[in-house]
Length: 135
Length: 164
Image (cartoon, rainbow over all chains, first blue to last red; front, side):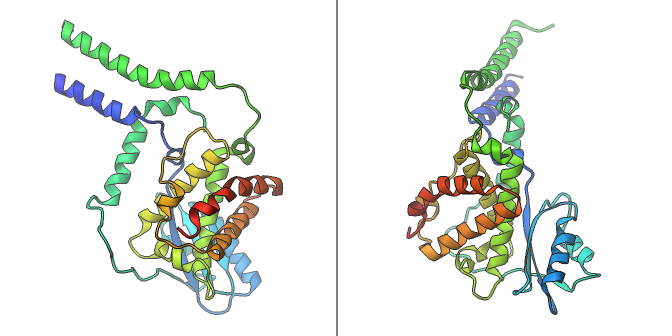
C-alpha cells in the first residue's frame, strides 16, 4: 500500500514538475504528400485545394500546380492518407509521394519515438497545472 | 476504518498535489492585467496551430518543386519513417510562436543555435522559410499588421539560425 501511494505520488510529482507545453493542448497531426498525374491548370488546382481542405481531419493543404505537388497536414485519428487518395481519386489522378528514406547516420535514440510521445501524453494527462491555464 | 498511517499518507498525497497546483494558481492570480497580447489578437492556440500547420504544408510542397530552396533542409520531413520528426518540429514551432507572441506557456526546446547547429542554413534558405510563413499567415487570414508584428518578433532569430 505504501509502495503504491509512494509510486503514485512520484508519478504526480513527475507530471506536475513543470507546466505543460502549449502544443499539448492541440491534437497531433501528420504530413502527407501527393503527386498529381496529368495536367493541373490553375482552376483544377483550386478545385483540388477546395476538395482537400473540406475533408474532415485535414488541417491545412498546399497545392503547387506547377510541380503537380500537393502537401497536407491531417489528424491521424480522423483520416488516413489512403482515405485522402480514395476521396480524391474520382476527380484527380493522385499518388502518394514519399521521399526515399535517407541512410541512417550517427547514433540513434534506442527508445522508440512512439514510447516517448506516449509518455508525454501521460504526463500531460496527469499534469494538474493545466487545469489552471487558459490557452 | 483508516489507520493513522493511511490517513497520514493520504493527507500527504493531497498536500503534494495541491502544492503543485496552487503554485500555478498563485502565479496566475498575481499576473497584472495587461494589454491584449499578440497571441490573443491572433486568436490564441487555434490560430497559432492553424498557421503552423499551413506553414508545414507550404514547406513540404515547396520541397517538391524543381527549384526548391528548402529541399536540402526539409526533405527529411517527407522521408518514410520520419512522422515523429514532423510532429516534433510542429510542436516546437507552436510552443515557440506561442511564447514569442505573448502566450501563457514557455518554449522548452533547444535554443536556436543548438537546434540548427551543423545545418549550415544559408540566408537564401532562411528568407525562403520566412516567405512560406508569410504565405501561411495570409492564407489563414492573419491581418497584415499582425503579420508584421510576428515577423518583427521572429526576425532577431535569424543570426541564431543562419550559418550555424
